[in-house]
Length: 175
Ligand SMILES: [Zn+2]
Image 1 (cartoon, rainbow, N blue to C red):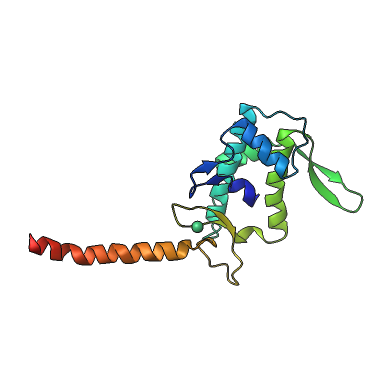
Image 2: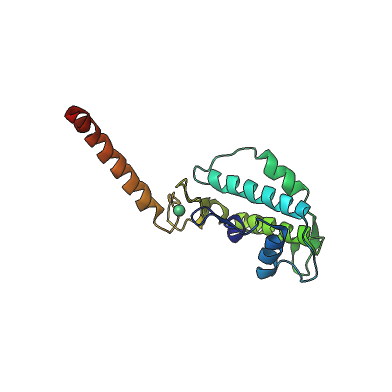
């Protein structure tokens, strides 16, 4: 699920789901889609809605607050899943072997994360130019930034902004 949210890379300015073929490549490379299935623009639109919704959900995990995510709820409701007996327990499984079933598997990963109490550790980096989905491994779940040094980037930026602010009055004095 984290890989799915990270199909858009703000740092590189790329989006693996920019085309229906890109969506198919992503799902195949994650063994979520058998080779024969075609992806359409309609599938891609659903995938983008799901990605956006999950992104919003991970943002909430910074503060651990409840919020109605209507758009996410709507896309989740349309996913083809059903409860089944798996021989040794009850499972939720997709009822469709195609693209919609593949998207359902992405969403089911979020369900599994919640069942494993891992869900609240999944966040998106708080640096607005990054927003990379990451797993917060800190003891008290207090991390705001991803593992790619965004915390430092934000610090450096704040430091430079302060320096500029300090210098500005002096420059005005010269003129
Ligand atoms: Zn980051």
